[in-house]
Length: 168
Image (tube, rainbow, N blue to C red; front, side, top):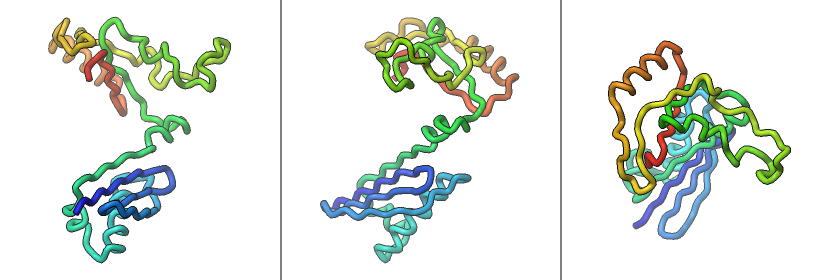
């Protein structure tokens, strides 16, 4: 038996799709703004109750479990993001600032870009470089990383975003 459970925790509702041997059932539960995981677990408990089982057995029966959330997207759209610093590859400080996305019409050269998610003064570089094929051109410099993290720590950020070129 193939059982797939997919969860999307949104701003208002957590949507759940249970697929069992090609048959799909759709569920909704309220999201928990203070604790996304709690909202997800409550939704899964609702599915388990509907199937007359418990959460542990429901999850054990799943061959695939996938989970996503639009919480980050909603926070960005609503301007409720954490005070974030950006750690990036040296020489690529402005890659996220020089962007195509974020505008209604990316071909309209007169349309303003939205404000960047991380201000330039909260961007920090580290010496490293991976090429597009995954080869290490410049190894990550541990001493440089430690020095940079100490500088970041002094700022007491709520979050750190990492954008290393070709790090995937």
